[in-house]
Length: 458
Image 1: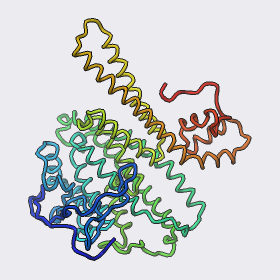
Image 2: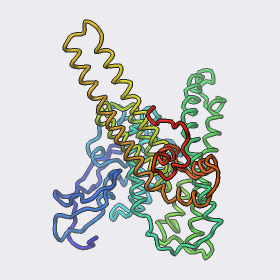
Image 3: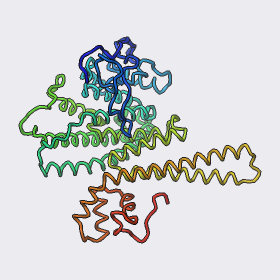
Image 4: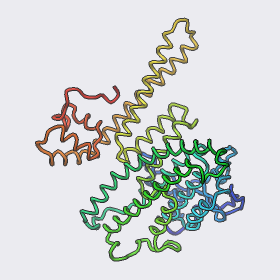
C-alpha cells in the first residue's frame, strides 16, 4: 500500500454515546476506493483506489469508532448516530455502569490501541473492545446480529494476517500430533460450551426466581454458586487450551527454545502481542484467538439472530443469512452441520408448501385468500429450489476439499472391509453425507455402497 500522499480521511469531532465527550474520528472522503474482489463469506480480497496521490490504508481497519476517554467502541454509524431503541440504550448503560472486573478488561484492551495508525493488532483490539461492550448486558438484550458481524470481521482480520506458507517451520511429529488432537478436542469443547450456555441460562433463571428467599445475596444462592463454579472451569479450560496451542506454534516456528520474542516486537508495555493476548485470554476467555474461534462464535450468534430477529422475517433475507452460516460451517470443517442446516430449511419449506396447498383445497375458500396462499406456495417452492441448489454446491465444494484425504485413507486401508473403511473415513472428519454421495454410481466409494441408502432430504 502507498505510504505517502494526502490523507484519505476528513476528521470530525463526534460525541461518545457513553461518556458524552468529543473526540476526533476519521471519515473516508467520497469516492476514495471501490471493492474489487470478494470471497464467498463477504471478505474483501482487494480494493481499487480511485484517487491519485492518496495514502492507501486498509479500509476494514477503520470500520469502528473509538473513544480515547472511556474506550467505548462501536460501528461508526451507530457511534456517530446512536440508536434511540431500548436495546441500544441498555448496551450504553451497561458500559457506563460496568463492574470493576469488566472495567479492568475494558481498560486492558482500550489502552492498548494505536488509533492514529491502525495496524492488524490495534484493529483486532478495537473489534474485541466493541464485542465486549455489546456483550455486557444480559443475553436477552444482545444485538446478536451485530455481535455476529463483528466476530466475522475478526475472522477476516486473522485470515489476512496469516503468515504465508514458506515451509520453514520445523517438522516435529509429536507437536503436530498435539495440534491434531487439539483440533478434535476443540470441536468437542465448543459443542459442550454451547450446551453449557443453554444450561447456564436455565440455572440463572432459577437463581433469579429464588432471589427473595436468599434476601438478594447471590453468593449464598447454591444455584449461583454452581453456575459460577462451572463457568470458571470452562473459562480456565479455554485459557489453558490457548496456552497449549500457542506453545505448539512457537515450538514449530523455532522461537520456543531460543527465547526470541514475537516477530512483530513489543506491544505497548508487553514484550509481544502474544503476551498481551495471553493476559486478555486469562480474564476474558471468550476472546477469539484465531480465525476458527471467531468463525464459530459468528455462527452461534448468526444462528441466534436468524431464529429471533425480525430483520430476517423475509424469506430472502432468511435464506441469505442461512447460506452465510452454512458457508462459515464449511470453513470450520463442520460439513455435517452445514448439510443438516440446509436439510432443515428444505423440510420446513416442504412442510409449509404442503400445508398451504391443503388449505387451498378447502371448500368455500374465497379467491382473495386463494391468491395469498398461492403466493405462499410459490415462495415455499422457491425456497425448496434454493435449498436443493445450496446443498448441491455444498456437496461439490466439500468433496473438492475432502478428496485428497479420502484417497489417502483408501490407499492406507486397501483390502479392508467396507465397514472398517467407512468408520475410518468418519473418524477422519469425512461427513456421512459426502460418503453417501461418493457411493453413487461412478463415485470414488461406489464399492462401499450399501443396499439401501439414506436420502438426505427424505
